[in-house]
Length: 311
Image 1 (cartoon, rainbow, N blue to C red):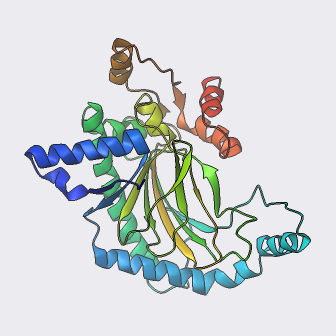
Image 2 (cartoon, helix red, strand yellow; image 1 turned 120 degrees about the horizontal axis):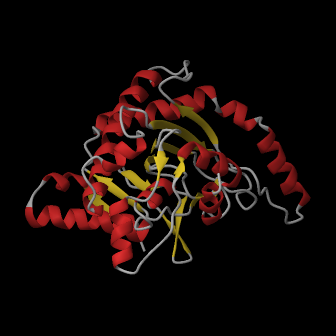
Image 3 (tube, rainbow, N blue to C red; image 1 turned 90 degrees about the vertical axis):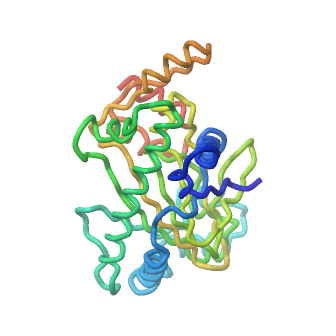
C-alpha cells in the first residue's frame, strides 16, 4: 500500500477531471487521513531554498549541541548496558517552532526571509485545502476556516515546526517521534525527499509515507475529525529513527484559535442521524482540548474527547 498522490492543480479544472480529483481527495481524507499533493502552487524555487536554509540552520546552529545532548549520552549509556531497555518517553528529534511573534534563528543567512515567504504560501494552501474539504463534506464554503477562527477575523493558529532527526547510533532503542495523532486541524508537511522514516497506521499495519521530491503531505488532525462528525479521521503516525541520514521535516499546522468552540457541523450530525450512523463528538473550547492533549498526546484519542466533554 502507498499513500495517495494527488494532482492538486486539477481542482481548478472542470467536469469529469475535477470530479475525479475531488473524489481522490475525499478518499484521502476518509480512508487514509494522509495524502500527498503535487502541483500545489508552491514555487519549486522556494521549496529548494527552504531545504537549503533549514539544513544549514541545523548544521550551523544545532548539530553540535545535539551531539553533546543528554539524549545522545543516555542512548549511548543504555546501549552499553545491553539489557533490552528502550527510551520510551523521549523523541530522537531536534525541533524549533516558528510563529509570527516568536524568536527565529538569526545566524543562518536568509533563514528568516525564506521561511516567512514559505509560511505565507503554506497558509494560503491550507485555506485552499480546507475549502476543498468544505465542498466534499457538503458544507458552505469557508465553514472550516470560520470555525477555526472562532467565527470571525483571523484568529486561527498557524505554526511551523522545523524538525531534524539526526543519525541515531542505536535506532532500536528510541523512536524519532512517538506514535500520535495531531491535535489540531490541517497539517501540511514538507518532508525530506531522501531520508524516509514517516509511517502511518492503517488497518493495523505501519505504512511508509514515501519520500517524493517537492510534494506536500496533508493530514487531518483531531479537530477535523470532530467538525466532520467522524467522516474524516485523524490518523496515528510516527517517525522511525535511522542510523543513516539526517531527516528534515517541516510541518505547518492550521489550527483553531484557543478560544474557538469546536463541534460537529450540524448538517453532518443531521445526515448521520438520517443514515442511522450516529456518532457522538463533544462540543468544546479548543484551548481546553489542548490542555488535555498536552498530558495525553501519545495515548488513545477517544479518552481525550471524553475528558474534554467534562471540562
